Length: 299
Image 1 (cartoon, rainbow, N blue to C red):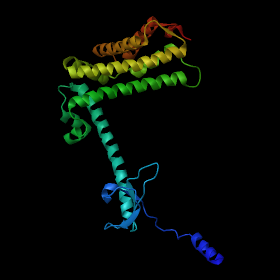
Image 2 (cartoon, helix red, strand yellow; image 1 turned 90 degrees about the vertical axis):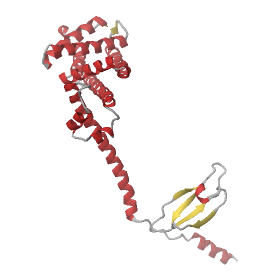
Image 3 (tube, rainbow, N blue to C red; image 1 turned 90 degrees about the horizontal axis):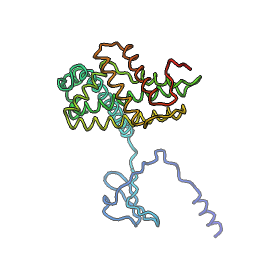
Image 4 (cartoon, one colour; image 1 turned 180 degrees about the vertical axis):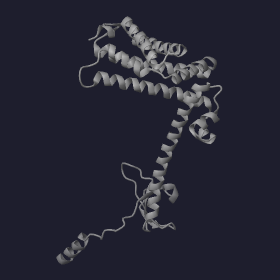
């Protein structure tokens, strides 16, 4: 008897040979096998899969079965799956690139001829795409216009934020408040095309209630984000505002907007426009921020 038990134990301790190609495991819903889980069973079907129904546990109710392929998977099937993922990612990047090129083209076309005169064909021709590419990304010219407005403002605010971080948090002696303001102005300056585009947006907002609602929402969001930046700067330099940060941010944005338009109308070049906007911004800061000293005061 002892020898029989030892022999049985030796047989149970022998490991099964490793499968050179371990099967993949899939899950088949209970609906496909026509019964609820709760009883162990096994079998195979015409697809070449061996399946095992798994009983419910005390914690989770199992409503599936384990499906194990009885045939060795084909290598080309595995590669097709990876290729499908790669193709999907490539398609997403291609779509994003198409949208960016259409937005860049729309920036130039809208600034050159205005929204009403600009056509979808003109935008597509400038971007090098067909009308099909346009309408697979935007439902209408107005939708493109609204997204362009948001994209331009987001890019500008990102540039302003990055510039401020660089001059206030970099190595060496920190910038003075006046130098920070100058960097704000430099980062916020629009090209002539940019000024024309924003003017076109405001004109359309005055004529179209839907555009007006979008413009108000955009303006409020932009003002809040600039106000947050102002609060951070005031706190960092130990300064005090004579008015709420939100009101100061709105006043500053309106000053930049109006002065930029005046510079274009006056035919000023970029350098002259920069000096004009800088002077007016420094004057506003001196009036609103206690402890602020302009460029003339130096360090």
